[in-house]
Length: 209
Image 1: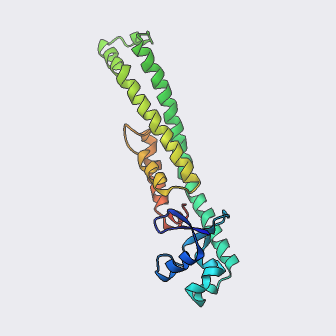
Image 2: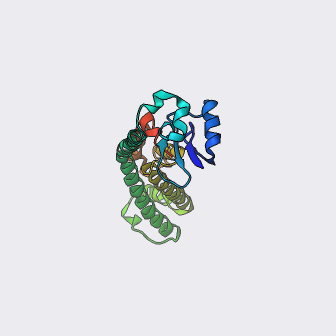
Image 3: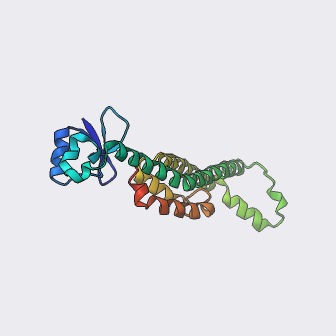
């Protein structure tokens, strides 16, 4: 039994060897399709497995399976290195944003409770009014949303660093750029763009499972 990565970067299976051979004949999979035995964690090119290599003709058999496996491993290592920089930057941004959310939540809760938090230092009544508007129920709701987004971003970065769930990683890169939603969107904008550029590279996208 085998599992494969389809053209949509989703995992399928387990399927039998006969089913894979039918897919080869129907051109639904090709020599570059990644496959692994159901009881193994090592992904290989379909053409690197002797059971299926003959289906692609002599040309695909010219390279030894060991060499092909090494090429797949090298490609994954290169993708991991490429995604490391933007992933770390987005993670730092999300953590910083969560710290700001927590501090703001404390501020808003105290304001809602009517506790004096030193706003009297703003002698201008208009300034005091503005700060009160930032607090209260609306501020707490905004903090909850910001905290939830920060947690989702951290989860997405974790998948990104592991080259898992491409769509989730891609969505995370967009989410971190959105103003008023992203934690620390000022920093998230360039880091999100950086991540999208890397994620759109074919050699990186192809390594996601």
